[in-house]
Length: 505
Image 1 (cartoon, rainbow, N blue to C red):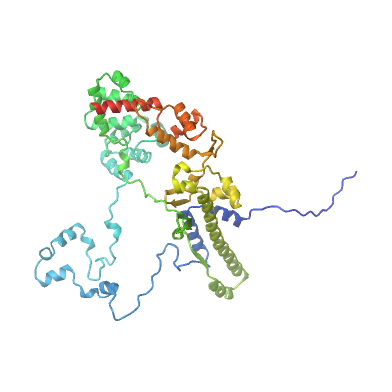
Image 2: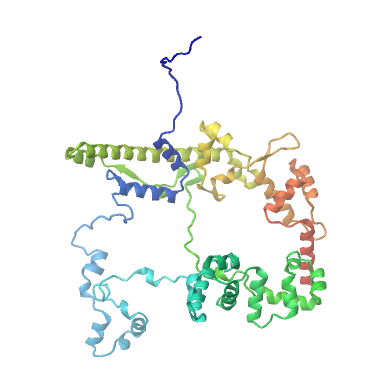
């Protein structure tokens, strides 16, 4: 059979992700803060988009002009007619005396902030209104606090450059997180010079910064108090025994009795193992719920979106019609058409995103009704696939919707991912148990134990199987216990004995 070229027509269907579809999928997993930033960027880029309230991105909401009437409004009384009100200096001049004699507190205020004195219209002498942020107290930054001290402690420019790199290598707690050899290689300096600068900076305020470990941080503070004797230094070298509550082994290693050990531990408790946390490390963002869940009058659950955090944008079609008529060439018309298509896509995508979040949240509430009504012990195992099949969506879509989203319930504020837990089989053939509910029960059993009956992992596994029919292995109990930062039964028994001995003493 001879081979020859030929033309064939074949028809087939395939799913193709367009750029706009990929962008819509990306919008699903954005938090409300990231979404508002994205919308603000689109508002600056697209002239046909505008906020529903008419404000530009980054501008405050407009306020309506006050209606004129014969009555004096509060604003007019305090601002528009402020000329009727005399300031402290004018009143004092009228009485031919000093301001302090008429207003005792005024003089002290002017001395504290002499440049913030206001004229009769409420503005400062410089012509600008006082900023309320000037009166808000804030913590100083740790880096700025240490740089100011380094400039006074160190004399040469080279040492100050090394100090800047050491300060940049500190974490929020004030610990040095970079090896000195790495800083020496980066700066091309001798390791001895780096160590000398570090030794000088370890005397900075707050005492304990620039430490490379917890024992070193405590040693710096004890040295500052002149309490770092050989016995205390030996205690810090064996701090692992203190963490494991092995008091007998610690006394034998350090070479002290119970009274000396208690005195040294009392001094250590007065120290701060994280001295850097006393300074500001940056703004703290609060978690805002995306969905609210509450009981309705009929006892059913009511689910609603938090519309306060959702951006509201509109397409200005009137402006589009006006500028289209004045378009000079095809390039301008093409640009306006693309802007209109993008604006229509954005408004549609935002609405679809809101509906998808509401749909997923409603299904989560339906499946976790027991948790919302009775508590964490009734949290059911739930997977992304279970929700996706019920609401006829893809599993990846549900995963994106529940990322970085929070739901406010009568039980508290939870991330949507919290409700998705694995299932643990029941030994009596009943319904499966949620892994989160099992963790909660393990913590309850451990919190209720006494010193004479500390529960081992095997005992906890047997109790779970006997009481609630939870078929869980010992290693699973150990994994859950370690995940909750709960020590082993041997460690807990030792801690309880030491606590009892301390109470008896």
